[in-house]
Length: 434
Ligand code: URA
Image (cartoon, rainbow, N blue to C red; front, side, top):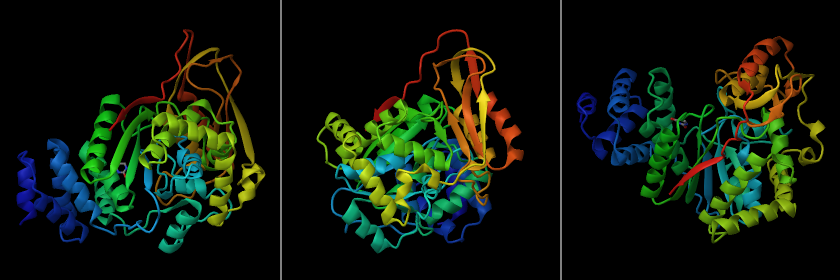
């Protein structure tokens, strides 16, 4: 077999065989195919697309390019949740203890943030002492004992994906449904879960900006999961405006804690209930979606999810007193209110611009080696549809580097549109794909 022939076949819009796809992934991850030939093949895939079978073969080959984790020593059905990323997405921090408090095991590997989107690991590290590094044995023992552990994805998982993603990033071949679906799913499948819940974000702050593309991506990933014998559900949820009110690492953890105390923002609570209920159904801890929602609500009102969060933090070396004392989180020395420049209804809060603004303040990374300021970020006061008066505080910025303020403010103000006509609030859930 020759890579030249595989490139030519895809260039001419023919279907690649399982063996050809495996050949490419194997040889490329071992460094036996040069970047220029891999780039040519990726561009041919980008332009001519892959069908369902080719996408499953690609995912499987990428999954097998690294370690495949065995979680069989953990009792029960392990359900993983994956979000395609967004602004203010602190869902795992509230959802993991919620689901674990309802009796379903949560053995989760999470990632870091890049650009305008945040990552769960960075947020967890805002908790003093919290460690995301764990030996496999401790990870498994923790889930068996406490039903919950979250760690970082090891470098030995889906080795081909790291190389391919870096190449796609510089060859304008990222936003292809098959390539994104395979890239996300190979890591989820290698992480060992029995069932997978996908939260595919749609809108301005998401990878997929249109509803059609979001449904197509969800369908591609659900087909891959089910095709590989994992019960998989995909949900399409809003990321046109930021999720909840907090954007930035410590601020988002505090919002997740408040949610477990029963004081969460409406959209975020709704998302946790919906995703949590589907996770419980997938874990067979609830028979129906409605029963799942009931259980999640009960875990909040009884305080059991908050207790689970404390156990989770303590088990991973963190200071559980943060749950009752937010002054233990990293603090910003500058707290700046941002005012509305006119009265009216908020018709737009562009998630990506808010995310970039928070990143400028220090909450995110522009390049993967940037250091984060875990205290930096923004607390919004409103959602789309709210009425504000001129001079009202739209948001509060938290920062330590004063020189960042002006450019962050400029981006932030650009994110808002305020109009005279009444505006409907945004919908949260656009659909479910099974
Ligand atoms: N996230 C991934 O892990 N891979 C992609 O290709 C896109 C988003």
